Image (tube, rainbow, N blue to C red; front, side):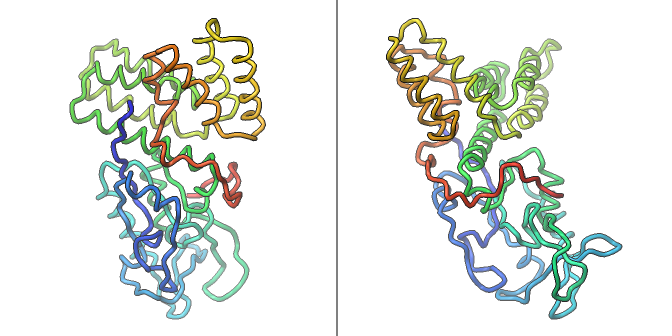
Length: 328
């Protein structure tokens, strides 16, 4: 499982692809730049797609008895129907996509943080919601990895996003020549990664792969895909990661010296308290996988869920709280 098929990711075009922001600017995002050689991006600017120019007068979301409306205050134009029509057509047309990176706070692309107002005139915001394009994306692709550029500045969210898009891309690759053998091998390689996210779903996936009803492999893959995506949806808890790490340690426990075990437990404790990233712990275990030539463990995606060049230990601290919720 060392090869990485390219995930397909829809991205707001202003994030490094075109100067299409309302003010004519482009947002240069370092993470997006690093991703470019590993991902097939599909850039889109919903506001440009519905005919708005660049630069353009601002638009804002306004609460009304008919629901949220997208209004351009300077012209009085109601762009709601055009935006919703484009968004609906877009999500229906896109195929084989693994994730989305959208622009935060945007009235079209914001994910839960776009401000909405009582009217088009200036005034205090009533609250926050999702932009009209993001709303359609969340409704149609809730099972996929959907983030914005602000949240991706948080290290744990960023690594979770990467884990999911590359896992989904590997799963899509099975469709080309699906067989029960290839699906069983896929499930086996993702076992520890899945346990770290959702142990209950691992049992469900095991029953699907067992294929007691002897169904066609493609039908089995359809059921597996839905549950697999659900399993990877929650951000893994530190305690769940530690349980997996301790389980893997058990494979070598009898062959390690007491000093080696103490060193590992010290690193594990540092991870528990947020002083080092997960990679610091997995790298110790990986060295033992190689030393003791454990083929089974070497095939576990848990150790390398995405390309090493995308790993980063720095975290700007500007990412929004992990507990923040999307608002559709």
